[in-house]
Length: 460
Ligand SMILES: [Zn+2]
Ligand SMILES: [Zn+2]
Ligand SMILES: [Zn+2]
Ligand SMILES: [Zn+2]
Image 1 (cartoon, protein in one colour):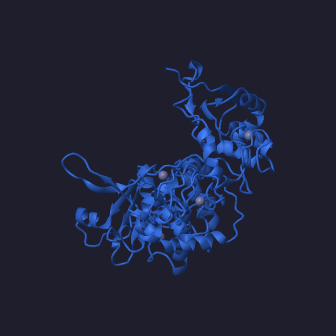
Image 2 (cartoon, rainbow, N blue to C red; image 1 turned 90 degrees about the vertical axis):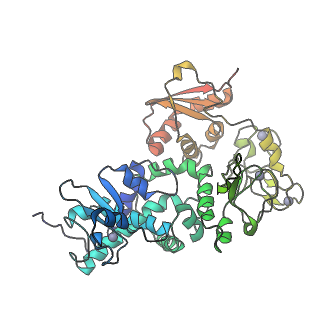
């Protein structure tokens, strides 16, 4: 018989976090909500079954004693194959609760609880109360860091708001409140996979993808009484599809058109097709429009016209072209977020709208002509993250200004960066070492050689 390892006397919190992060990194998970079912499907030797389903299939009245033990799920290691079978109670009428339970069960597997401490199943019978408690706490901690990884959520807009965390991570508000308390506790642990996770999640966070998640999660509660309180976090403009994320906005800040306040906001798409009116179906899809990078003091980090950081540093207007560094409502004169093209209160244009209108379409894989010699290169999907690290972690603001509207492709060790002008190309050329350092240090990238090309638009 296999000797049972000793169950730790205290929960191993850091190990649980480390294991959750490793799983997020290994599976290249890059957006919220993290889906425990998808994770389970990823492993061919893990199987997920519902308790009712198993009841029908096996003819047993209470498979795995889920009912008699009042458990919502249980995981067993199957004799013979060594596969894992996770059984959960489908009768639990709460998606968020089931998500949490499944993440918890994944925790038992990944933390090695079933292999190290019991040959078949974790149940109260085989373990003392304390032993059982320790493993439960570890699985709970793992589930928290899987569904609401601290390293990501402490970086987003809603980091101090349990309702916001609940919507993004698709967990219950209670779970989010507990999570928030946990996050406030000091943790000096460093986990080597953190950069990798942040790299993977970066596009989702910076391009507004998580606002869609928030919108969809909130809309699931339509038309219940709590819906109004949830949809204030993310509405979608019916004119331009922009996300409207300030609950008090009366106008869309991207196109200026009126947007219904949360209590009047209808989240569903109206699809009517052919002879049959399909009616209201599914949620609106939002858009995130480009935002000029903003410094700490609510001013532009660099002039978007001159693409230069020095000409604007500590000034009200750019020395080179007169661009103002602060955004205002042209009707009321008040200061507004740099992202706004229109005032959310009165709908008037902002001073920045004219600048946004002048900016050329941003470089992307479709509008840049790739020379034949780079044909086999693939687009670097974490490039935005690397550019951010150059500006804000390595604090090379001028280089950042030159690269902010760039794209990159790579083929293992070789990378090509497309920029807009010769001036920018020179700047990138001179700073290859800094770029390579950030690629290796923050991006875990294998790139060793960099070429720079001034982008040419497609000509037909
Ligand atoms: Zn458990
Ligand atoms: Zn709009
Ligand atoms: Zn300028
Ligand atoms: Zn205004």
